[in-house]
Image (tube, rainbow, N blue to C red; front, side, top):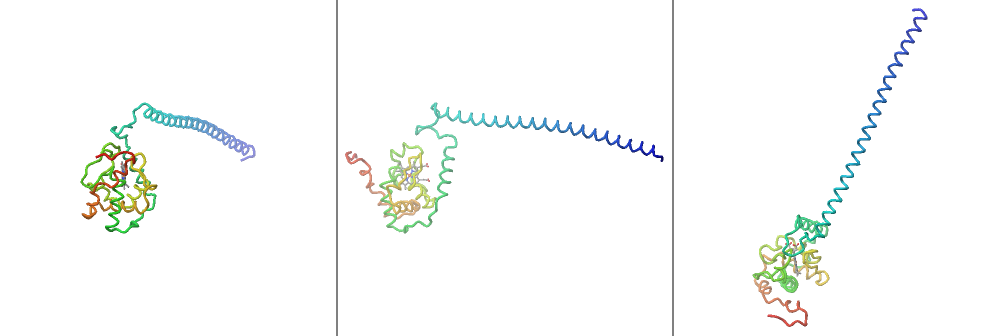
Length: 230
Ligand code: HEC
């Protein structure tokens, strides 16, 4: 090949590669425009999603506010429970109790003396709501929501460990009427009544008899000035 022909071939190669580079560049521009557009659309969708969530939260809050301020929420004893009220309340209570130490076995001896002492504590502090063996529900128990379970009728809390009853008697159960006794009973007394209740299905006739005697506490539950009623 002579020199001219070589140069022409080189020029041809250069021109060819320049054309294909220009093609690539066009493709690249088109792709990056496309990407920008998709990015823009995604951002709009994301914003719409956030606004949707915000509106949802506001609607729920407004609904709850309306429910509680316009007399729809159950507040009378005879009103039906709120949706999921029982489930959520019991779940929350169990989770809370589960966090505290489980003292097992109970730090009081399991004997007749303990059960008799527990029976005394029970008659004075618990019987008015939770009832005595063989007796029906008191007027107070009948008028409560939630209802205090009869702890000497059926299985009571004999299926619960004593520490669970100890926790409930010590700390109470908020918004149920179940009082906390940690300010009024000492630890031993709370344990005594708790082990009594955990074993309520196997107490001796002597303990049963002691529980059956007129609750020593009833007069002292009344203000001193009120004459005792029959
Ligand atoms: C003013 C009424 C009242 C008195 C007094 C009372 N309780 Fe309660 N108690 C309740 C109510 C109401 C409940 C039900 C709470 C619930 O449904 O979550 C309850 C629940 C309990 C429970 C849980 C029962 C279960 O099935 O898990 C235990 C245990 C208990 N009380 C023990 C006692 C002991 C022990 C005393 C006395 C030291 C006592 N209570 C005094 C009203 C009372």
